[in-house]
Image 1 (cartoon, rainbow, N blue to C red):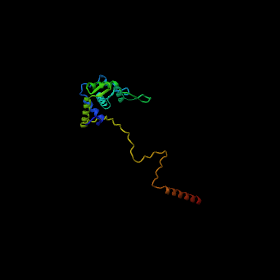
Image 2: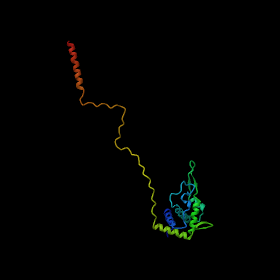
Image 3: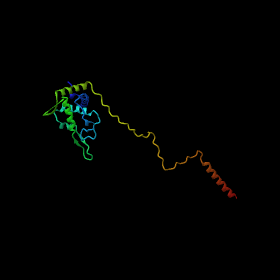
Image 4: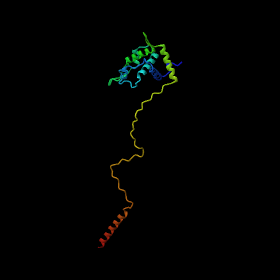
Length: 201
């Protein structure tokens, strides 16, 4: 027989949360839209149906670890508080949220409250096992991930031959195809003829 232990916790909690929405006893309080789930949190939950998800998680927690009380459950839903330059410190979750959720689950007759603490009722056991079996047969749709805007990457330089850096030296002038050798010889010839004419005179 399929039980709560045979199903992943995240899938089961989402399935139970959908079932709890149809229960008249499970209603978010008036302050649920702006309340934080603990002093370690900076902002309230973004999910508008977070109350049903928390109630489903509490019901599963009582199934697995019950009987237990509110103070023990606060440590399950706590977290690290950012204290600035000081090291982070653990803080327990909100007791008011857990207490209200447990009271509403008691009104659904899923939880019993006695001297030992809160524990699951026979109706709660059968409800959770039925939800576990339904989760195996009809798993909930995956939660769509938030798509972050794509950041344009800086353009890289085109790969190829590295460009030569301009040096401080001036470029040498290109040599003409015609060599200056005949001109030089002509000057030498003229010089010899001039000397011969001077001697004759």
